[in-house]
Amino acid sequence: MPDTGNGKVTELAKFGTPYGREILLQDVAHESGMNMLRLRIREGSRFTILDVDAGTAAMLGKSMIDWSKLAMQLKNLGSDID
Image 1 (tube, rainbow, N blue to C red):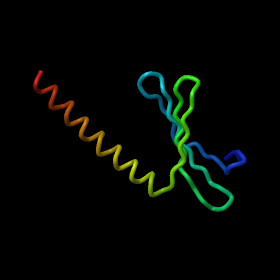
Image 2 (spheres, rainbow, N blue to C red):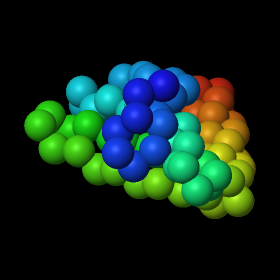
Image 3 (tube, rainbow, N blue to C red):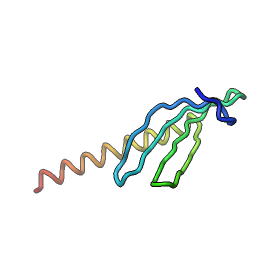
Image 4 (spheres, rainbow, N blue to C red):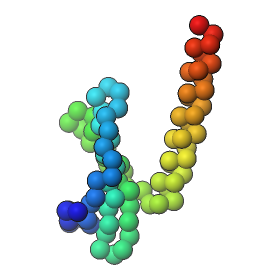
């Protein structure tokens, strides 16, 4: 875990997405004892960085799972129609 000056950072997951974007999830452990989940989204040379607490990460994760299930159901319905 490197110390970046704003806490110790541990890489949790890294994956590519459509249109050449890349998402990196990191655990950031601050010296104060606070832990945050860092989402780093790379779009070409541009980065968007978002640090969230555990509660926000849980809500975000649930919302993403709910959306994914709905999108997959709609896709399956569409393939039955074709």
